[in-house]
Length: 416
Image 1 (cartoon, rainbow, N blue to C red):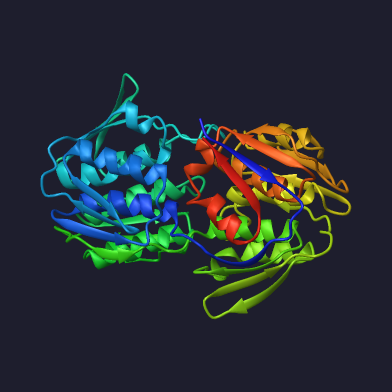
Image 2: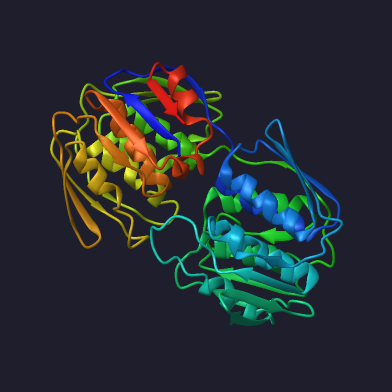
């Protein structure tokens, strides 16, 4: 099993290119199931989750090729309609094939999803929406089984905004008969990217990026040839890396408008930003200032940046209070940061972080994707050597992270 060894205390400096967003690529790949023929998706990161989604589509009978950051999917010969446990257990996004399969083929059998152990993340909103659209849904030995002659438009209200729920039902509604309204929909840029791709396929969608999305179903969709947006969480992670090391880093292929809440919060800690034509320059202070944080659905501060921000606050001047409102089990990185000398206490969904003058290298273990990123950030600032174990979590969401860090001057080695 791979591990990452980082020698901390080096100020990052230089340029780095942000990869395409995994969380935009996975639903787009699932959307290819809505049409017969060859679709092409460009700007796709070379990640384990992308390859897992590729194996899932191949298991359904599709052709899948990844070459030079582009994916080509041929869905003309889909012959199976099951997403098996062996593939779904490692990646929650596998559930995104449910809506497209039911919409186009009238049936699907999808294992209940896995992924990072950061909370329950139930798919009840997906199932509720499909049932309102006329599908018959039942659970069978750990699988969701859904059937429908043809889905019908419906008015669907989410108690809480769900990104994958919005994406799954938006895809399903694109081939439904009639008009579907998704009320209290997720507003993330990845949802907008998927809507843009669906529109290029011939779907009729209005309101993506707002709380109410209206989809008028069509009889048939065509394959697409589109790009995925840059990964805003990778961009935010490198912002944090520059900030904690007092660095001076230019992030290319980055859309700062997707990170307004992160940029504003980092500015309050003393980080300076300079907008550029193709990205943004991030300049870290001599020492960060403590600042409170509360995670919220987009456009609020993303839960996927909470762990990275906590790493920053662990060495900031003063005390920070961090509230996690999205997932009930997303403080697993706290114990590992403590091993490096961080002073953090947790009560329910609130962490109190008392900034220390410096962290020290240690052997630590990644517990989920974003927790692994927080440990990398902490290690970059720590005195001595840090070894991060269970690196497969990092590889699920960050493309060649150690290579990008080395280009910025970091001393990072992957040990196989």
